[in-house]
Amino acid sequence: MGNVNWAQDQPAPRRAIRMIHANFPQVRNLGIFVCRNIKGTNVRSAHAEGRALDIGLRADLPAEKFVGDQLFRTLIDSARRSGIDNVIWNRQIWSISLGGPRPWIGHYKSGALKNPHTDHLHVEWTRDGSQLQRLDFLDLQISIVRQGIEELATQQQSLA
Ligand SMILES: [Zn+2]
View 1 (cartoon, rainbow, N blue to C red):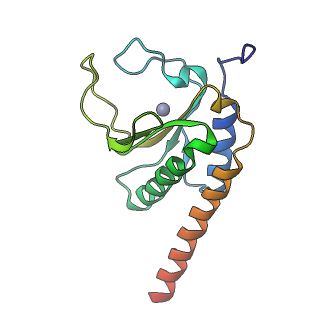
View 2 (view 1 turned 90 degrees about the vertical axis):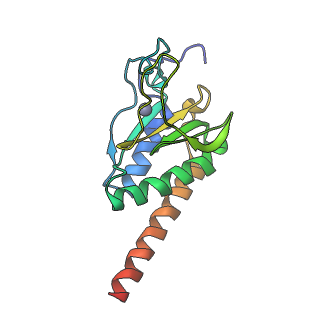
């Protein structure tokens, strides 16, 4: 890991957004590497090492919330095998250290308001996990989610 350039997008989040966007063209890539601190703190965000990904989905739009909820579940279920450390979506967080989903509301110790993540889903990899070139398990799970949503849409159309 000594020769990793952390000032750029890391392989795992790069791979993940490519596969998620291929399955769900409606999601927006809001960025991986961004040099910034966690809001209201002096702590470097995982984005500052290119190992966090923001997936643009709006929780106030039912169709996007549905996809976001399914992706949130799938990312949690795939976390251990995919090197994922934590996932935040729509006022909820899951992390490898504390489990969950748990409420993600209120303020940091600094007093800054926590971003509720109602307009994007944050996925963060561990440093080791971020170097994974392949995410085969996650890849499969995401295509299963897409197939499930497509089947649901077909059933709804045939009932209409
Ligand atoms: Zn983020």
